[in-house]
Length: 370
Image (cartoon, rainbow, N blue to C red):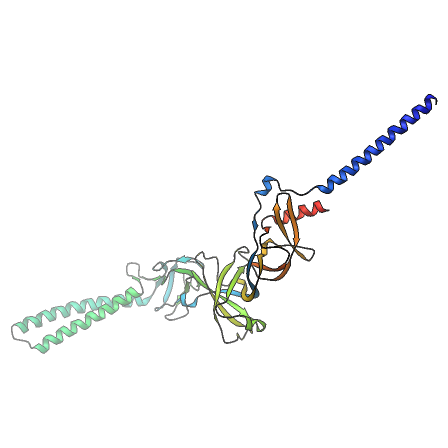
């Protein structure tokens, strides 16, 4: 064999060795790639949470609508007992006021009349007191009779009673003789929910309400019950209430009463839910979504509605078994309400379901699988 043949043989051997080495490396990379798993790193692990499924009575959620209203037993419509012209106002719609706070001032001719009557009565009382002293002195001397003494005393008592009436009226209207005005004060603590006066407004005694003070620490949610849900809604049923203003907040309550008369305009029955509103988040006029919770007679595994990942028209959860052992699991939902889903299959009672940042983990696992 010549040198040229030897060289060609050596080159062929080298090419074949490189080829087989490359094939072996590619095959090894494929095998290693197939063995890779998604693992949680320590930083991200601190940002996740999980829950355990619980066996609960199956509760069906019945979706309804409603609105927030004031409790009519805690609403005061202020009507003036005297006429006049509003000289000043010290409040606006939506303001919080306290009982006894001055809200407006009213100039009225009735104040002048009452002041005039008060001065007249004061003068008459002085005359009456002197007359009684004189009659008493003559009675003591045997000059006047018991009847005359009694009449003098009676006349004085009548004058004093009239004085008390005038003072009571002045106090009732919170008169300020120095300023020549009546002060209109808040009759209760609450929120101004309507106002119909401004400086310069002329009002009449007993006319429409000047303003309305509502105590909003307790409100009513009036729920609309349509014909197809009448048979399912009962007094005492628990409800969850959500608003657009606070989408992450669920207000809970119970149906306190159900009207037996159909609302003529909306063609619905009205149910009343009484809610404590100490933080004043619920405002009259707010529209709300109401979920009435109908208790069933069976039990099923329950998970929070918020842990579910919806993808390709299927429901999934992310099951945590270890930092490198996390699984996407398809679940079957039996029924659900605004807070919980009841399952007919997919997970077991003691399995940990990731409840925070589960969507990010779900996408990561899908990427590894693909």
